[in-house]
Every structure is written in structure tokens, then in C-alpha cells.
Length: 143
Ligand code: AMP
Ligand code: ZN
View 1 (cartoon, rainbow, N blue to C red):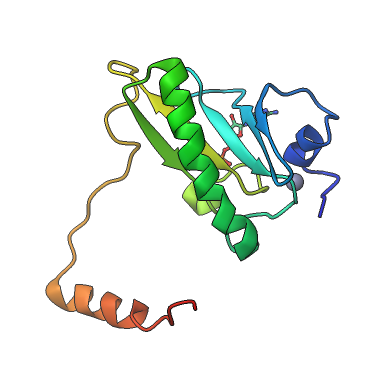
View 2 (cartoon, rainbow, N blue to C red; view 1 turned 120 degrees about the vertical axis):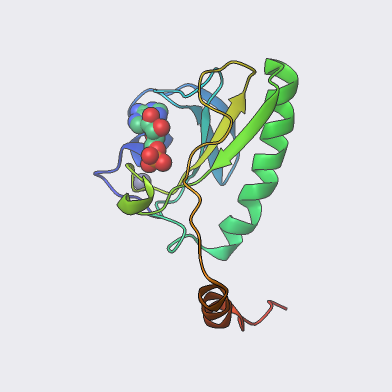
């Protein structure tokens, strides 16, 4: 449930300071210490799960509901013009703190970040698309 070497576990336990903007039984939401924009915040599950692969479905099912409520609340209070919700898993995808977290990033006209938080578009052939579709298609819907 907790990893003693984890900076976010320490934040959740109140052992290192953070600027909390919301807390309930499952989550703490804190301001990012190195924000992309005014109000950039992180949703932290209180349990230590390294990434989405470790995150229990029960917590996963609650987190986007909270993200939605936070986005509405933050947009109202900060008067931002848009919103990015970002969540990185594993080093190759840009994760630097290995306690699952979801970035809430209010966006403003002229906030200097570019319109899209950022990937390059690639070309795939029709065969490649079909191959990818075939590999991915077939997961059973949850009941
Ligand atoms: P990621 O790259 O998705 O793993 O994001 C990690 C985020 O955690 C970065 O945006 C950091 O600025 C943020 N961060 C690191 N340490 C702290 C801290 N002590 N308090 C708040 N945010 C932090
Ligand atoms: Zn942790």
C-alpha cells in the first residue's frame, strides 16, 4: 500500500509538504511543484501503485470521475480556456515518478505550451492498420 522510498507516498502521509487542493478517502490532489501552467495539479491515489498496470480497477473507475469534477471546478475558479488530462506510464512514455498520477493541466490562450501536448503523427499502411486492429480487437467487454 505504501512505498517508503516514494515521494508521492510521503506527500500523501504529510511527511513532505505539498499544496493540497482536494482530498477524500481514495485520493489527494496537489499542485504540481513544477507546473506547465497556472493550476497544474496531480491526482494521487492514496495507495502506492506504480502505474496504470498496477492500478486496481476499483480505483481506476473512480479517478476519471474525480478528474471530470476537478476540471469543472478548476475551470470555473481559474477561468482557463481549455484543459489537458495526461497520464504517463513507464520511462519510455515520460513517467518520472513511479506512483500512479494523473496530470490536470488548465490551458490558457498564449500559455506558451503549444496547442497540443505533444506527439508526432506517423504514417501506417492499410496492411499495418489492419494488422494492429487484428492484434487489438477481441478484448471481452466487462459485465
Ligand atoms: P510524470 O513525468 O508524469 O511522472 O510527472 C511527475 C510530476 O511530478 C512532474 O510534473 C513533477 O513536477 C511533479 N512532482 C515531482 N515532485 C513533486 C512534489 N514534491 N510535489 C508536487 N509535484 C511534484
Ligand atoms: Zn507511492
